[in-house]
Image 1 (cartoon, rainbow, N blue to C red):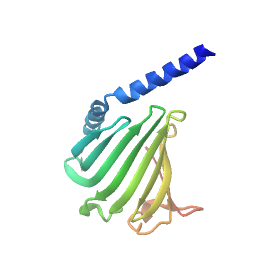
Image 2: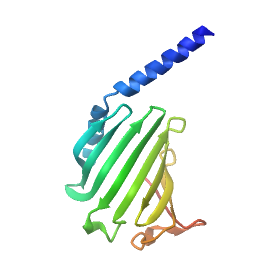
Image 3: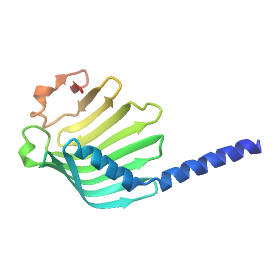
Image 4: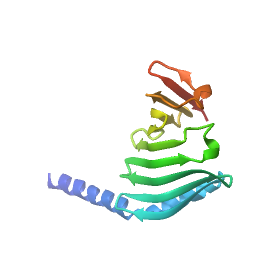
Length: 171
């Protein structure tokens, strides 16, 4: 029995060491480099590294050199078997207000190791609330707009569903 306790203890120590000592900023810069190959640039004013994650402050998002959004804070969190991205106060540029909702109060993307090709999505903003998923296996996005309001600009892309409006697309 003591061998089992020792192996569990050793496994927890190794896992904790990997998560805490992981080069989070280097991984973020690799993500930034990958996004720049798609002509998307993130310009943050501050980076704070914690034991289990990384926090980006005052992030400006540029696509093909055009400012498209400002984000107050992005929290990246990982435990290796569970990862999440929390976005706080996303504000789209005024030039895009006819195409997308102007403000998102909070958005959350969650990924679990037991289902590696699925990312769950939740968001709350001026449009109401959204719950959905990104499925990389089937290569599609499914979003349910519950409590929808101020989504007139999105109506051409939405379909009426059982619970409200639904957005589906494949990539």
